[in-house]
Amino acid sequence: MRYFQVNVRRQPTEHGYMPTMQLYLLDKVKKRRPLVLIAPGGGYTALCTDTDGDRIAMQYNAAGFHAAVLYYSVKPHYFPEPQKDLLLAIRLLRENAEEWGILEDGIAICGFSAGGHLCASVSTLWQYAGEDGELDTKRGAVIQECTMDISVSNHAANSVCMIEEQPVDAGSTKRNDSCPSLLYHPNAAILCYAILTTRLGHCRDFLRSHVNDDAKKLYMASCDAQVSEYTPPTFLYGTFEDRLANVENILYYSEQLVKYGVPFESHIFPKGNHGASWCDDTIWAKQAWDRDYNYIRLSVEWLADLFGLL
Image 1 (cartoon, rainbow, N blue to C red):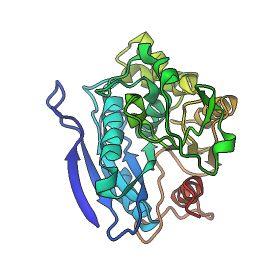
Image 2 (cartoon, rainbow, N blue to C red; image 1 turned 180 degrees about the vertical axis):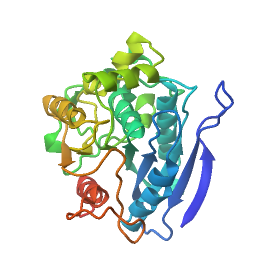
Image 3 (cartoon, rainbow, N blue to C red; image 1 turned 180 degrees about the horizontal axis):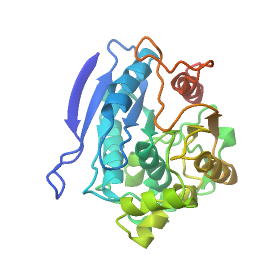
Image 4 (cartoon, rainbow, N blue to C red; image 1 turned 90 degrees about the horizontal axis):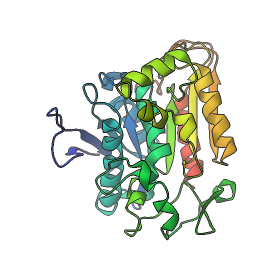
């Protein structure tokens, strides 16, 4: 395995922090492999890399995927600084896809808790990213003018994304330098016990703190309100017992995915508190429930199907 770290930004943030990305690249691959880019949780105040970092990355490695863990900006940074970090990380992976053996149209983002919100917000706002990764809502219509080289995959029939009156698979878009936003496009999203809505009071309070009480940014950070035909195929996981990222987050977000014709898979298990993440017991022993709630394995199967690896 090739194991190394790269800077995500050219310069540290205004608070002196340099976001980095730790890569876990498989050795001796005969052809390019998809990559899962992991955003740990931590409430945008810290990064829970012990539970959401290399253990998750190694699980995806064991399943035949490259992996990476993003060390993104947290407090005192606010929206959209963490989003910029993730967007720039996606671009860095895509620009180095040939050298690192990454399938250019196989970049999935995977987030836990606040990291799940980060991945969902990038999934729904990537088309507004400018050349430097900054989010600009004024650029919302620019993507309509872009001509894209499309690689159609096995789930294209389920997509309703339309650009220049041609059907577009929202999960498979090749780079086109005439449309810089496409460099930031995630091909899939895995959202684990994520905060996805402002329709619940405590979720709204959490996101209000993330946007530093900015009303306009709060609307942009309300992921279910930002879902569109440009949102990539999505895998959602949560539990009924979670009282922080309540199941309504999944239900509201799924409702919007249905509205815009975005393919998705959703799992709501009855047991498990917030932050209950399980890997295969060869890497990390799972909770001793009567049933196996290994959503990592389920997401692996979903990704393999999505990227035509089955």
